[in-house]
Length: 131
Picture 1 (tube, rainbow, N blue to C red):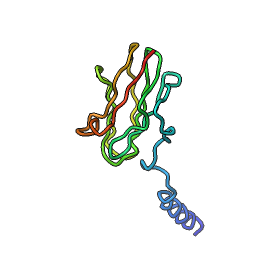
Picture 2 (picture 1 turned 90 degrees about the horizontal axis):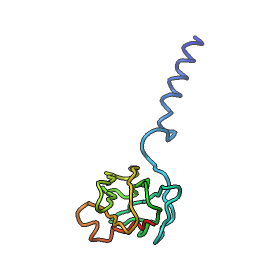
Picture 3 (picture 1 turned 180 degrees about the vertical axis):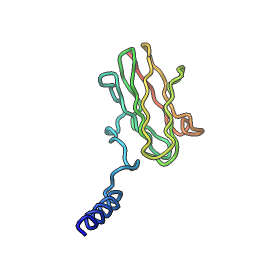
């Protein structure tokens, strides 16, 4: 009898676990505050994409070399982060998708933009200033 009660209690506990909010892809890392300019820290930068078509930063500054970019999609539609003149492109298909990749950049100014049709024209673009 005791074993049966224990099994029933265990089964009920396990059934309640999904209601606790664990698992699933319901959240993503937080976005930094929106800014006109953001400096890469230790060779890394986070960029958030929003609907209808905007990034949370217009200018990224970094030293020459490898730059790790994390793109967080806070919108409900697909967004990308492409560095012009390179093969580097991150694609996030939907809400709370997170992608990270690395690109090596030389000194100068490099345009970044969203490759989804109409997004760059709507203002989803900026520049990486490399020193």
